Image 1 (cartoon, rainbow, N blue to C red):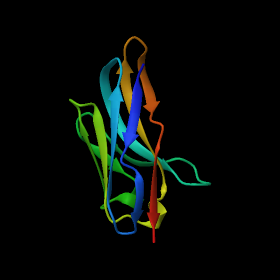
Image 2 (image 1 turned 135 degrees about the vertical axis):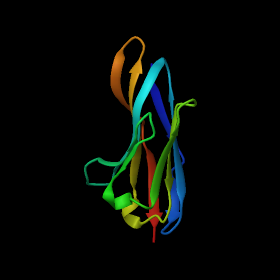
Image 3 (image 1 turned 180 degrees about the vertical axis):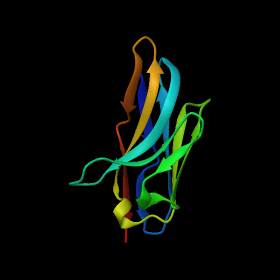
Length: 120
C-alpha cells in the first residue's frame, strides 16, 4: 500500500523559513509528478508547486520567488523550502504524487497534511 508522509510543518514568524519534506513508500514502480497543495481555513485546496520526474517545476504566482520545490528520486522524496513566509501562507500543506504502484497501476496519492502557521 502506498503512503505519503509529510513532515516539517510548524509555527514560524512572518519573514521566517520552514522546510517541508514528504516521503513516498510502498510498492512503487515509478513516480511521475510530485507536488504540494495547501488548504487554508474556509478556502479550497490550491496548488502551491509541482515538479516532474525530470525536474521541471511549476509554481503558484503567490509563492514564486519565496518557495522552492525539489525532489530526490532515489529516496522518493519531495521537499518544499519556504522562505520569507507571510501570514497568508498559513494552511495545511498536502504532499501529492502521481505514481505507478504495483499491482494497482497509475493513481494520484495524497499525504495526511502538515500544518504551517505563520504569525505576525
